[in-house]
Image (tube, rainbow, N blue to C red; front, side, top):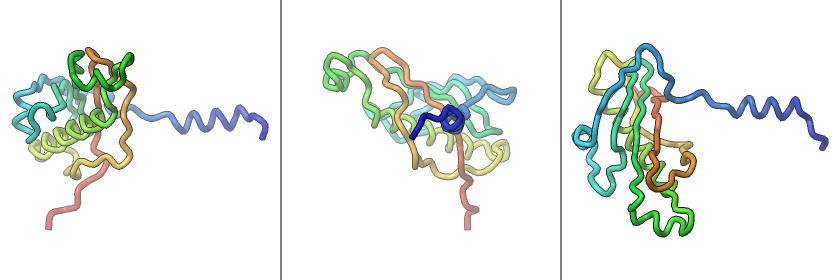
Length: 151
């Protein structure tokens, strides 16, 4: 099959994604730290993976969260020797915890949220690019489904 530039351009255009978190006028810059996150989530060290939340938009149900990867983390010694990166499965878990924070913050905001978000799920999650020790994993969450009305 010959190379078709128009078809390639169409595939590339279709594959581009809209960012999950775009700064808008309704975004509130926040400084939600570890102690506040511990009040939201049941997770504790070493499985509490969200370090801080820096932005939230209740109207579009989006949030920006961060995780600093400690260069001394023992996981980095074996994943991978010579090229230590944080495991992708734990980055996906970090995204899940950030999504749970978003869900709980939206649920507690009441009418300020556009709609009642569904329980957090990641049916098509993929780990972001590799994060080395000393790096920061930056995650963005967006509610994509509305929960069913309570019975």
